[in-house]
Amino acid sequence: MEIEKHGSEFESSCLSELKSRVQSEASENELLKKVIDDEVMLKFNLIGRKFDVDYALDTIKRYLEARYIKYTFVYDIPPSSVRHIIESGVGRILKNKDLNGNWVLVGNLSKRQLFLNLPQLFTKVINLY
Image (tube, rainbow, N blue to C red):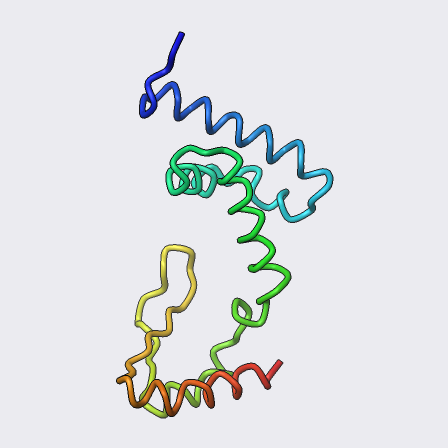
């Protein structure tokens, strides 16, 4: 029986296959344990990768590596360390948190300000770590 490419049966079979692949590889990769129960992330990666399970799994692995190994300083910046950015007028923090409860810093840069200030601002933030 051939399943329609965008039918709900196809999508649910891809999701269950991705879940089983994540569970089987979680024994080798500790980071995958963080997304075993995150069905929303699995679905978004499947949709974004056009239901290619291998590609979705690879994308999840690369995201987890970037999030928890390579660029941890970006995700764990306390508000006190970016106070100088806010006080300089380059960025501001939105009054409401995002859906995950995180504060959102929005930059307001012209091309000239971006060229002159951004490398300095990032080196200040990175040097804090």
